[in-house]
Amino acid sequence: QKEVEQNSGPLSVPEGAIASLNCTYSDRGSQSFFWYRQYSGKSPELIMSIYSNGDKEDGRFTAQLNKASQYVSLLIRDSQPSDSATYLCAVKGNNDMRFGAGTRLTVKP
Amino acid sequence: EAGVAQSPRYKIIEKRQSVAFWCNPISGHATLYWYQQILGQGPKLLIQFQNNGVVDDSQLPKDRFSAERLKGVDSTLKIQPAKLEDSAVYLCASSRTGTSYTGELFFGEGSRLTVL
Image 1 (tube, rainbow over the protein chains, first blue to last red):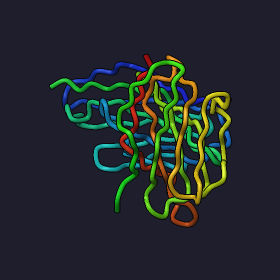
Image 2 (cartoon, helix red, strand yellow; image 1 turned 120 degrees about the vertical axis):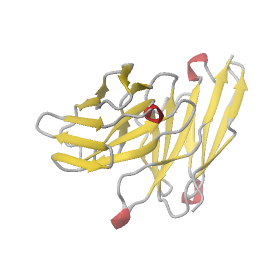
Image 3 (cartoon, each protein chain N blue to C red; image 1 turned 90 degrees about the vertical axis):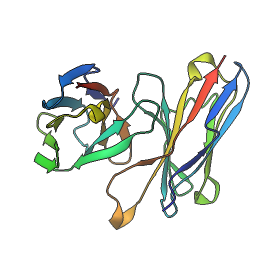
Image 4 (cartoon, each protein chain N blue to C red; image 1 turned 30 degrees about the vertical axis):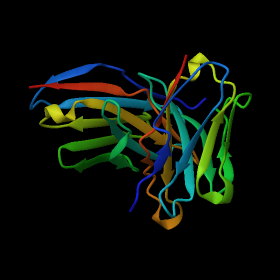
């Protein structure tokens, strides 16, 4: 069974702080890794993708990948109340795309 | 470009009744996915189509769920008979294939099913 594990949270950070979200996966053959944001009652939307080991930065978001440790993380710098949402880690194997349970983030003003 | 279209947005049925959900992917997207998202959980892949062929349906409860994608465009997901535990949001997503494939899934707004 291919598993994608995330801390369910909730994770609460003050406005302006760094939020750190973590994800581990079981399938060593996984090729691509994604972070989706899902607001309450809405569908997931892609915020970051990462394909190779190391860091990838996009504005206030940084994704980190360590394939040897089967670990993916997302850092959100200067967190804003509008970042309050559930963050889903998604992992793509040969064909399928599997999601973790999500981490609920609350950014307090 | 138009997004992924799903209908109906909401459906309330009693257990043992049947229900069908429809999805029309983004034009040109060959891959179509149906996910089930139970409240508080992540999306669970039910079935994945590439054009009109099934790529993965290992988590589809085949005794009650069925899906088809005739002509490789729109798709229908059916539940018959429904159980209480089928209450969830059914998300349809599509993605590109080939050299333009980035792995990104584009989701519809979802169909929320309540089974009483």
